[in-house]
View 1 (tube, rainbow, N blue to C red):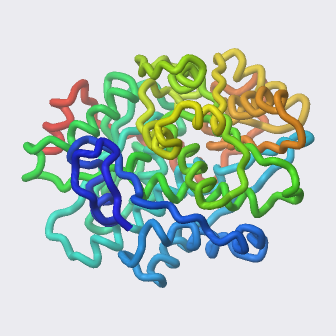
View 2: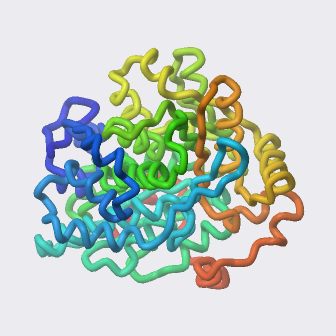
View 3: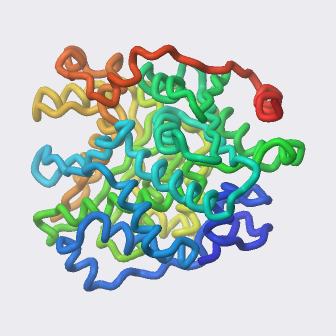
Length: 432
């Protein structure tokens, strides 16, 4: 499998080079040269396969022969060490819970998969210089990447996060592990962190000091395995006769884009729904046809505080850069903090279900869409455990939540971070 830059001004590369480089020299995101649908027989009989077997069938074409079959299966087995249950909420609506992994966020899948791919390439090639994984986080990415790469030989991780704009639990997950993990606390928003990361990849002055790669969803090894759980969800459906819709709370749009890869591979998904907070660049684009990135606005659903979503260009590519095709497959809605809070309260009081603000927005978007259709069932993605958002949950709900073991392990550890205010601060650190 070859990967090409969506800016179309860089050489095609292998899966290995796309993973190690993170981003193309022309600042474009890598995209697979082809997507071949899986056999209909496999989709129709998906209940007969284990999650590991499903994941292997989904991902193998994107890797080709660059990782041998047995090694790839071992990577998948180590990645998928937790469950992805559907919790019924009301008629035709369920929650797909993606937070049962080590850091209690959906990004555990991509973080663990990428870490093991990079570890495989490093071990095989016996590089003299460590690889530095540079990653920006608006919330859960940092913790998932830190956990996934913790102790991986030959890899150092540098995480940039916006000061004061992640939850206490999220901050502890990315600032307390030590070893090969370093957290840089940035004065600014997530978009500032993301811009610094992209700039650093193409900065020739850093080449003598670091071999840089990215672990954000711009990296194909972080992005593509997120398609797994759309297949796992389809496997669990008891009634496959109804049209299926996924509602994905979205920030950088890597997660929903991976779902669209699943659709291209043959999953019978009718359409996708994206719910955003007031950072609503994509819903506005779907409505007006004008794509205008905006400065980030801080909200209680902080993982979606993204004003310039990197992965949206991949979504456009999947729809041939045709807004009419995209509008048929993607519906967009946005919600305020007050609306998200009321939705959390409604889910708890009506259905005894504890949702966090991102999942609550996914629920609201799904409810809105289902008003327009018949014979349809929908799943909204719960992307993080509610314990990460104790201070913004609906009144009285936080007291009902016991701290999971994954959180107990870090919550009382001292935070260790390095504060920077600009790109020069990042380069000074990387050159030190």
